[in-house]
Length: 356
Ligand SMILES: Nc1ncnc2c1ncn2[C@@H]1O[C@H](COP(=O)(O)OP(=O)(O)OP(=O)(O)O)[C@@H](O)[C@H]1O
Ligand SMILES: [Mg+2]
Image 1 (cartoon, rainbow, N blue to C red):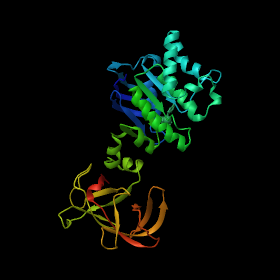
Image 2 (image 1 turned 120 degrees about the vertical axis):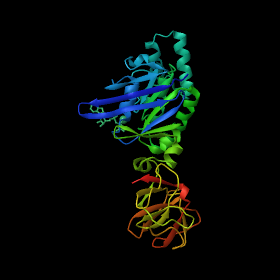
Image 3 (image 1 turned 90 degrees about the horizontal axis):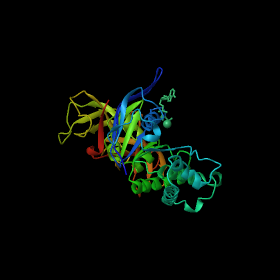
Image 4 (image 1 turned 60 degrees about the vertical axis):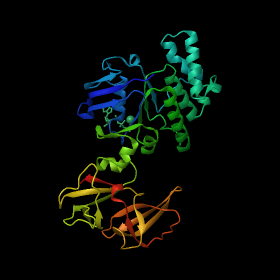
């Protein structure tokens, strides 16, 4: 069971502070949408207005086509999970999960079936008689999820639910949350400031910055086609090459950007068009796009100033002639040394043009 969610011009101010500018956002029924952004960008504010815990200063919210702006939180068909599990310490796991259902005055049999189902779903059946303090952090978070799932809300809001867990457990719980999203079929709106988590989990990401939406798109859209420098910088590692469009074109007629480190080809598509000679631009070059070649045989030359091993790959840091740095993924088998001078080539279509 899932429902479409829509915010229309929803906004929030606290006195002089604008917590969220007027925001239009549509989340499709059954979709997994992540609100991603730095601290203070308005993620929790947006989520809390959807839940009904915070009243908007302007705009409206629709769930399954119904205006719920003035409907109380318990009657919106929404479930919430927070970073702090907020389990009742004096109640067993089973009673914690049953609590909300009993509040909804469901029959004894209905409650039992729903609690058992929810505990099975999060694989915590064997822990039903324990108390929260007898569980690990990851187990407590599973119970918090079960408590929310038990009454089968059609929209589930999750605010940094894995924030308190260590990296290994977080990654495990991420795949659990993906599985649960599929099993439940509900609409998920998930808040995180962790870009890797957003890329892994989401059907679409809504990137937020300074109380507004910066860009909405699939993880691939945001990684390959960031619309702004902020988006390019927030998701993945980005090298930004700045310069002006050259008067002369390249050998194949391609437009050229004159950067401090050298002349580099421009892609002929993307968010921004190359424009006329002299126009200033910024080119996004992801670390995995370039290939190391002999010096003077590529677009740019650089000197290796650092080598960082990441386990899955090795990154070399290059210092260009103007003193700026580029981070480049190094293929396995190559063994660069600090101090070596190397050239760089890449397919221009693997770069993205951003307005300077
Ligand atoms: N009750 C409040 N009173 C005044 N200002 C508030 C209140 N709640 C939030 N704000 C402000 O609104 C802005 C957005 O806050 P919000 O909690 O939505 O950010 P966030 O993106 O969730 O950040 P974080 O990643 O740190 O949780 C911040 O500048 C914050 O200080
Ligand atoms: Mg927050």
